[in-house]
Image (cartoon, rainbow, N blue to C red; front, side, top):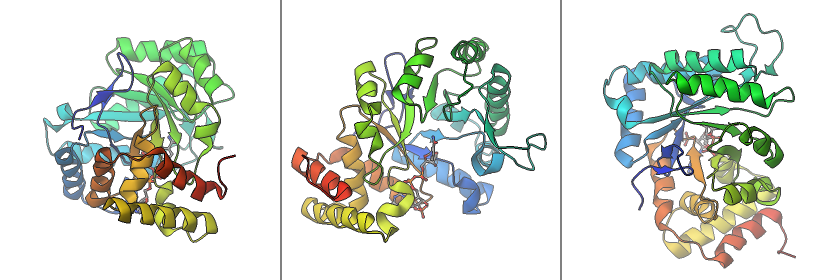
Length: 300
Ligand SMILES: NC(=O)c1ccc[n+]([C@@H]2O[C@H](COP(=O)([O-])OP(=O)(O)OC[C@H]3O[C@@H](n4cnc5c(N)ncnc54)[C@H](OP(=O)(O)O)[C@@H]3O)[C@@H](O)[C@H]2O)c1
């Protein structure tokens, strides 16, 4: 089992093999002591990387995390903190915004990153991502903002999220990107077939994977497709003597682009199930059993 953070790419940030996602943190209703306990239990497991975004919890999640972190000075040095910028939400926290929109101006990127630092109560981010592709994105302007943040020591590495391969290539031609954080699970297969993972493998930039268990639908969805996938995962799990969730993560780990799943669960047991998948090797037949259950047809 790999317990050490490993780089996303040559010269890129080293992340733990499983990342904990903080999107839903504000909905967990925890005290700051409980939030700190969750962070510490993740770290005890080996999960030292935490995924944030400026807009999570309508701009409140980073502050909740930072407040917990402030209880344990010294813990920050053992963590890798990731955040995202580039979305403007209509929120009581942002009275000037009348319409939800993307914003990849240099002014927004720098202000958003600086605000994330304040909220997370840290002096640097290990990785900052542009959250969504923006039709108005000017690659030179984004690259300049990234360089400003890098040279000020505020952000160490940069990447994107939900970018198509051409969008990734455009920005990467101006400033080196460490990763594309994308959706992928047995219920969301697009990245397997639209060139996203091929590009990741070609360039040697490991993708980060959001909603790796489809936001829980793998286990709770009652549509036909979810049921088919769940049956396949359960059967394989019984054969291998592990839990179905572990099989779902092993299915991601099997990909040659070496993805890093971002797990959104509040339960340490669920994070443990993800972690355990590092020890499970799926053969091609088993991997395609899950693909076939998802698509509802054999490979052509
Ligand atoms: N870049 C982007 O655009 C983007 C978009 C979405 C998310 N993200 C990032 O990705 C992270 C994960 O996203 P997500 O929360 O949708 O992912 P997920 O891990 O697929 O789903 C987590 C949800 O599934 C439930 N769940 C039930 N059984 C589970 C199991 N065995 N293992 C894990 N979860 C289980 C969890 O509930 P319990 O807590 O009760 O276990 C939780 O509500 C987010 O926190 C965020 O950091 C990024």
